[in-house]
Length: 306
Image: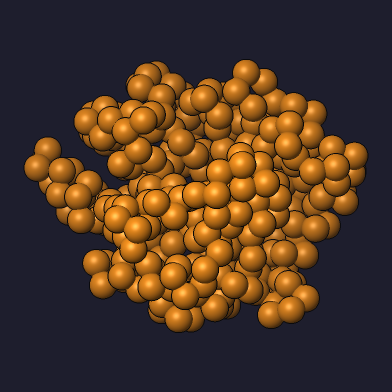
């Protein structure tokens, strides 16, 4: 079992404390028209990650997709400059803006592109993806193109073992996504569902937890969706219910205004602010280490074909 980073494969034990859902090199401007959602300055991003390293963050997963202009080779350079392990991704995002290739291409065509990213990497620097995601569904139901991406992701998982990270829109359809992938042969412990912490219903969370998938609490310090008080309460209830081994923590940083160099929280807020709150509410060190170290280590580990 290995964890595939953009600088090469490492043993899972080397990963360290890891933020499971972030963005480091991306450009959402063509989709949302917001220049703030462009992260391209490699020097700036290396400095951000280096700062996070001094505060205890040793690994980051960048879930930027092909259609949000991910750049695996740029991630490798940022990872080298910052000495933070970075896991890169592949796949396509969600929604009506999915490119023509996704809307008109076959499942096999999409699978071949993702499989190339996972097994062989880029034609330039050879950096490889270590996860598929974040791939998502629209708020009320999955579009045909979105289902096609999920089907292709399941194919690539079956061929390579690489894990799958989904995106949920409007805090809906999390359990349905897990069921869809399970029906395509993906074991739930290879599935992580994003943005769980944007839905305040404990029943919504338990439905995913009982299916065996990972619940990604990745909007810490994003009060426009849920307050961290609600986030904390949900986590405590899930911990009390015995689901510590299925919880991942992160920020989903995607804006320049969120960077420390621009006066934002940076990539270490979970460690410097949220973890102390967990301790104040009686969460033990073993549980904190499980959520931030052991769970990412287990989730991102896979055995690729030789």
